Each structure stands twice: as structure tokens, then as C-alpha cells.
Image (tube, rainbow, N blue to C red):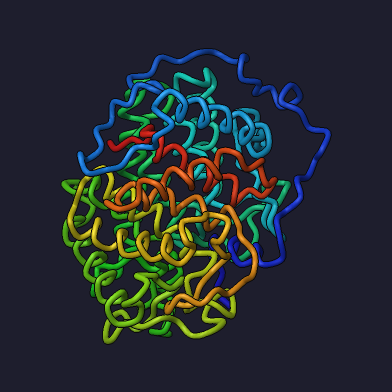
Length: 422
């Protein structure tokens, strides 16, 4: 059985995870918000230096209120999930999912968050650097410039020791942001590190035939085309690919186009009324289609489930910043459908749907709700829907579930216009 960092997602079916180490405090961690050495940054949180497209919607609560809500939640998130690694100069993001205490996906998320919160948290750069050092000390067995996707509480690599594409894409993108934020003249040469990871991604995570991202650096090594020609929709980071254009590691323009074309194909063939994308897509070299049940992780691998829940965020932020018509069209289809499906009430969102729009689970979950807010910013008819989503997201207490809380914070960074591009 092949494993990937997104196996984190399937465990959410059993409910939210309980926080471990209940007595652990920020003081014990040594990462209190007022502690640490301040580092100068070029684009502090709240400066809104990143231009969004003129068509992108803003929350009616206003810029200052959105910034405050995002910052307030960041401190809660940090207190729950940022912890020291096993070396004195490391940090890690606690996922605590089954055997995996840490996953590469979480390290990538943490690096994105810390580089964007710089100026608000004086320890942001120290945390970023510690997260990066941790990832470098856990190389994949297949390509040592990528990260082994899972470690246990004692920082031992577990569960196959190979990479997952999503984690490494976010790590590469975050390193480019770090170069933009702090420059590369310090202890870590962020630009060089980004190049190293991007070269490895081009070598091990891009299918040379389809130009689509694969499931991990193990995929090119398998003789089974079911897996070598498969892809995960939540890894389709259009904004990342757009920012990588011009980097010599790969033809990122053609990679971006290949993913946008597949999105259009999957929406028109399998989700014409909803725009939803499945967790996994197979047969990408012939006739792409949703994966079959238990393809890699769960019975709903061919539905809009715990992996694809991230699609509205990934597509939405590219649409909101770039204004690209293909990205806007793709994500607007999803946003328009969900606001109609729910009657404009975020409480009516359900945890997963079949591609024709039937709810999989009877309950709501932040994992599904928060990314829809990012999609709503690119939905021309979605102002009231965006405001309702924002209000619900902000008023919902932390779930004490790494995945839901982290997607909430990442989505808030996008909607509050604190997202960055290199």
C-alpha cells in the first residue's frame, strides 16, 4: 500500500483529533509571542503589499478587523501546533495523526504561515528557519532533496520514508517567499534552498508525459501505471506554478496549463452541475477519470472529500491574485454551486460530496468550510456568501484538530489579503 502525507485527511472521518501534551505551554516551549529576537522583514503582516486582482471580493468587516481576526487566531494556532523538534535549532508542526506526529504537509503549511506572519510575531523567522532545518534533516529515501513525509514523536522517519508532493511544493514556495521577506544573506540561503527543492520536484514529482504533479517521489519508481499516471487534486497549486514560471527547473508555464486543462476536463465530464473535483484522478495519460474507491486512502477517493477540500483554497487564491480567467471560471463554478446548495448558510456545508453534489457525511467541518471562503473571493455573486463564511469562520473556536485549524488559518491569510507571492 502506498502512503502519502494526505493520509492525514482520511483520519478526519473519525472526528477531530484531541490535542496531546495538554500541560504544554508557550512558556515551556520558549515560543511565547513576546519572546525571541525580532527580525526585520520587507513585508510585515498587515501591510497588504501583495496586490489582488480588481475583481477579487473583500470581506465587508473591513481590512483592520480581518487582520485582527487573523492575527488573533494565529496565536491560538501557534500555541497548539508549533513545537520544538528533536534538535535545539528545530521546530515542527504537531499533526499527531496515527503513527505520524509530524508530516511534510504540516511543515510546508507552517513555513507558509510563519513567513506571512512576520512582523506580527517577532519569532517568525526563527520558527521558519527551525521548520526548514527539521525538513532538511528528514530527507526522502528516493530523492534526498525532498522531505520524508512522516515522523513519529521521537523524530524517527516512519511510513515508507518517501515524499509527498504537496509538502515539497509548499516548502519550495515558502523558501521563495522567505527570500522575498528577509533576503538570502543570513544563516540560510533561502533562494538556493528553493532552487534545490524545485530541481528535485521537477525530477521526481512532475510526470514528464502529462506534465502533471504525481503523488510523491515514489510514483516514478512504480511499474503500475495506475499510480504513475495518477494525481491528487489538492496538489494543483496553480499560484505556486505561476510563481515558478521562469525558474529553469522545469517549464512551469506548460505545467500550469496542463493542470488548468485537466481541471476543465474533469469539471465538464464529471461535475458539470457542481464543478467539484475528486480527491484523486487516474488514467491521466489516456482518459482521466476519478479514482476508484480505496485507490489510495479511503472509500471516497473518487469524490470531493478530505483531500479535495483544499481545492477551493488552492484555485481560489490564484484566481483572486492573478485574475486568470481559467482559474476564476473553475473556482467560481464551485463557489456558485456551494452557496446555492447551502442556501447561503455556511452551517449547511457538509464534510464531503459526491461529484454530482450529494453529501457524504451529515456533519460540517472547518476543513470544508474555510477553503470555500477563499473561493468566494473570486465569485462575482458571492459577497453575501463570503461575509457569512467569514463571520462563521471567525466565530468558530479552535477545533484542536491540526488539519482543520491550519486550513482555517491559511484561508484567513488569503481572505484578509495577507497572502504573498514571490
